[in-house]
Image 1 (cartoon, rainbow, N blue to C red):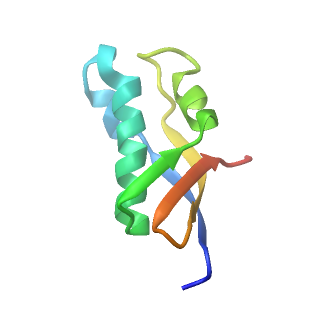
Image 2 (spheres, rainbow, N blue to C red):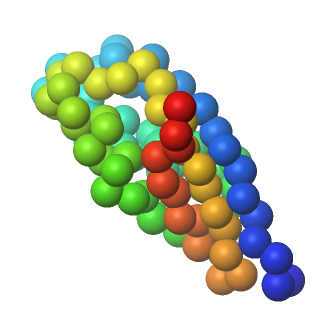
Length: 86
């Protein structure tokens, strides 16, 4: 299996806004990781700092409603995600 799997996803974060204000950004990060684990069938997901900065841009309480990411799965089954250009 020498080929890499590369996909672009728009991950909705609307349901994260229903949790307490003080835990929204950390929950959104976990939500992105869980989404990528489920959809790319991966055991390990590594998020780029750009995704973290985008989610935390307006603070812990005001997260974006969605995030667009490029995900690449390598031969070991590790998914590396970066923020996609809009």
